[in-house]
Length: 116
Image (cartoon, rainbow, N blue to C red):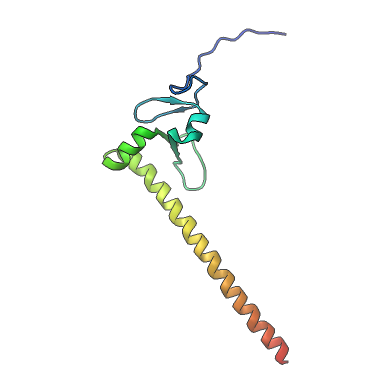
């Protein structure tokens, strides 16, 4: 069975493909490819996963809001992004330290076993 369906889609303002992103500040529409080529930036609303409250900003608005620090919502997205980066760096350091401590323990254990 065939069915004709009419629906409205947003079109990318840069390349005229179907758009999936909309700037939270200026309402510019962008497709995945344009976002992928650094014309916009997505911000998660959570540290561990993406939600419906995630934000998206075109490059122009992202640069402007980053400098002005006047938009509370944008600043909140940046705070979450910065905390996530901080956590990743801490995790990296902790893993490196764990490797060193585990190697030290293994060496001490081997010396103890060899001395028996």
